[in-house]
Length: 144
Image (tube, rainbow, N blue to C red; front, side):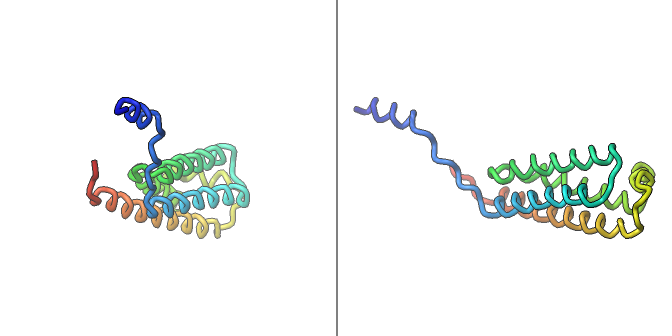
């Protein structure tokens, strides 16, 4: 009988781990960020190179969102948001390695800086939210 119980318990699927609410909220916010990136792509003309870069950024957002929504560590998301926020700021101020962003858009109005600063603000807000999730994850007692 004991062998039957052990066999049945080994064959039963493990109950899915409960994903903390902070992870869920952060994951959905990152999905919203990906949607914003796609909206920017649809509403503001970009060269082929910058379109590929923007799609890669969006794919990275989706990868991190998927990880966090499943309860994974938000540390990679924190780094991604920091890098993306810094890149958007660099594009707005015209850092040498990002100067081509504005040079490649012949029809860009000067007001293009405002949406980019708002996207940078969004990225930094997600970065800080990620830091809070990472902090909470590392300060909770571990069971097992």
